[in-house]
Amino acid sequence: MSVYLKSQKIIEEWVDYNNHLNMTYYILIFDQALEVILEKFKMGADSAKNEKRSTMVVETNTKYINEVQEGNEVDILLTFFDHDKKRLHLKMEMVKKKTKRILASIEWLSLYVNLETRKVTEFENEKIEIMDRFILQNKDNFNNEDLNFSSKIKK
Image 1 (cartoon, rainbow, N blue to C red):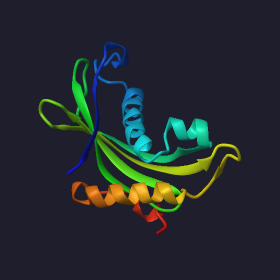
Image 2: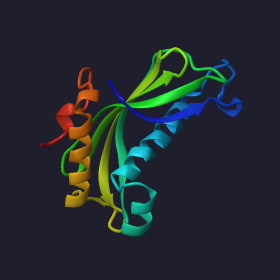
Image 3: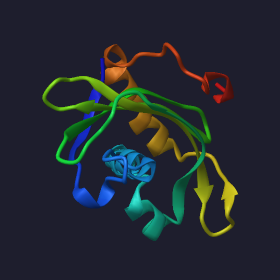
C-alpha cells in the first residue's frame, strides 16, 4: 500500500566506516523524494522562488529497520499523506528494489510558511484542492496505522 516517488542507488560517498548508509543520507534521500510530491502540490522549489511559499519540516520520526549498503538500489514510497490548513503529515518508506524489503521509514510533519514574513500561513485553495484530489485518488494506497503525528493535524 503506497505511492511510488523515486528510486536511488546508494553511492560510495554515502557509506560510512561501518560499511552502511550514513544516517545523514537517509534523510537526504527521503527529502529528495518528498520534493517529487511537493512539486505535484505546487509547493516545491518553484513555489519558494516565485510565490515565496514553501514547507518547513518541524518534526520527524525515522526508523532504521534493515541495513542499506553501497550499491543497493532503493525505492522511496509514500505510504501515508494528509494535511490540514497549515500542515502536511506524511510517511515514507525506503524499500530495497530487488527484494521489496523495508529498509527504513520516516514520518514527517511540515508547516506551510510565507518566506517573506517567515511565518506559518494557510494553504491556498488551489493547493488544498490538489492535495484533496491526490488523497482521494490514492486513499486505498495509504496506511494510517502506526502513525505518531496524527493528533497534530487539526481538521
